[in-house]
Length: 194
Image 1 (cartoon, one colour):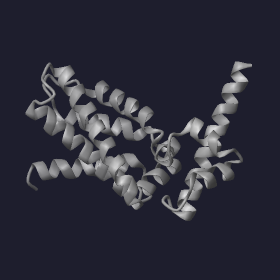
Image 2 (cartoon, rainbow, N blue to C red; image 1 turned 135 degrees about the vertical axis):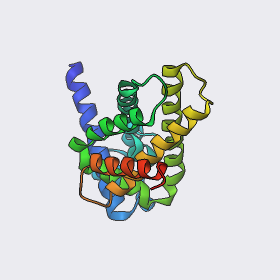
Image 3 (cartoon, one colour; image 1 turned 90 degrees about the horizontal axis):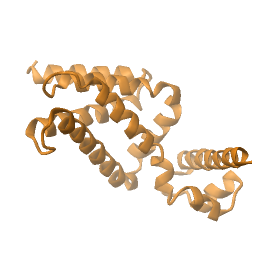
Image 4 (cartoon, helix red, strand yellow; image 1 turned 90 degrees about the vertical axis):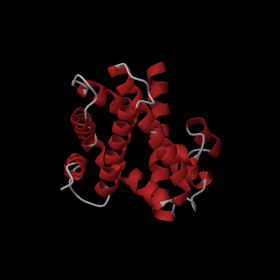
């Protein structure tokens, strides 16, 4: 019985998510109400709030899992004796590979964020969270403080590269890994003053 109940909950959540994203694209994020989302999913408005605290949460709901995948990808590649950009670049590439199976939905979410000014503040807070997580991973791995200059610089560059690659990826056809690899290549060239 519990398995069926959980499957029904997941199905309802998926229906709400699909309806919300479809309406956000069709009508615009700011122009779409929770009532419209619930109606399109075939549920009551109060049901929406059992699954999501707000419309923003529908757009950003996958990021907790993504942050854990990102952290694992970065941690797995920290092999140098001191903090090194090459390790982080390899971690970014490993993380980018996981997006291909969910390419369309991930691109749709990223496009919504880029095209919706009212989502920018939360997106900025999320970037700060990812940068801080990267800094924490580096600090813990290399027995440094989170405020260490090298730790902060590498964490900032890592998230800047991921952000730039994602921004390019939503406008182009190649896989995210290609956009990440191109951004890494460009950073490497800039650091060499090419």
